[in-house]
Length: 339
Image (cartoon, rainbow, N blue to C red):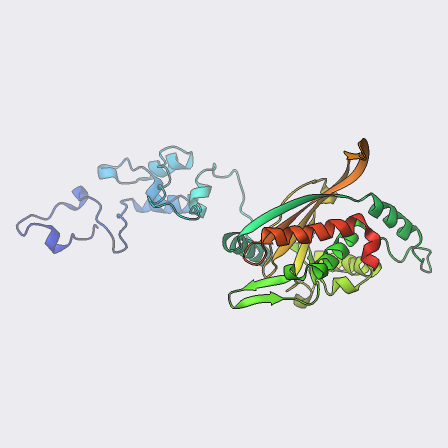
């Protein structure tokens, strides 16, 4: 039954209208009441369709079962409500019911989010909304690095089964170079807080590792002090335990920056979202042969593009450029990482 209109709004002598002829009266929350049959309400709920989006064909616009059936096939649906007249800073997201109403029932399945997926979504949504990101991209010639990697791996000591004790990857060099670069540009090794800038003494690098249902960033602590072989060993151990979800919280919480490498998937350039409380994250693309000009001659070089995402609250453009420049110098001259 419709709620009675406020007394002050109706003439004292006006007769009460018949219930079926009454216009939808506002509820206490300001939304119009929607007239529908009990069967229509049940069918709409099962289909995940909001009643407010269905056009009623019954008496006085009442929603009946056949209206819900038409809505399930995509007919008779009203457009989603327009955004408020004032321009919001972030567009409102669609509700679950609005999204599901766009697809034919039975054409999809819903896989519930686990705790990890929800945590990732919440943290990265907060990051992109609250942290003013800017991005710096630079190309690195890793020809010397590839030669050094091959020589180091060839000289690696063997175990009892004559297997090498370590096998360095390009990512191991990236981790070491980023760690040393932060020591060279310490004003980038920071975290923003409202009370003040947190300046870190060591380079604790989180490294993104893909795993079923999401990703996690185990942290190489004090990476600037560790050899490439130690970094390599730690990363292999982290990767195995991350995929079986056996990492301890202290092994992936905190850190001062992060590295995300999609080069192994053939991605040559991308940007990454900063993972709070970090102020930076380095996105690493694939190495590929590209023509370059050296001493007036065109040569082929192994080029790797990297993009540094920076928190503009903590790091300005020139300072971020210093950091990515220091990284480039180290990754192009790997012997400098050993000094």
